[in-house]
Length: 178
Image (tube, rainbow, N blue to C red; front, side, top):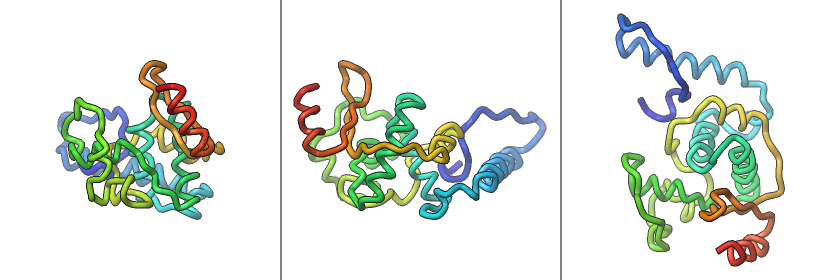
């Protein structure tokens, strides 16, 4: 099932129904969810497809719901400023097509791969979601969390993301934590 077609969750179905019926039920659940949230102000600037793409980025980057809230705010802040998103998960997707774990750190050469999914090369959103998106992640998007953060990186020793408001602060923190 394409990433954009359903909201990831735990679903139960009767073993007597066909897979196509099950898949259509999942699509209907997604449609109903978006209809219920259609009055959210976020739809003034973003389409349902955009939100599924953004959700997939948050899904791949965030560690927990609190982390996802801040990463969501960073993504929206960068989009509003017309900045490149520069999200590692998009480069990982370019390399693996979402089919396997890379099992190595990204290299500088990886960040230069010319592919529309590579947010280090192209501004804006990738053309499609890079993973399934869970309902909780979409709920976070609709809650429209705010911050002044524009940058973040993952600190392996602390096992958490470190956020910054400016590039200067970001570089300082990178040097401090690494």
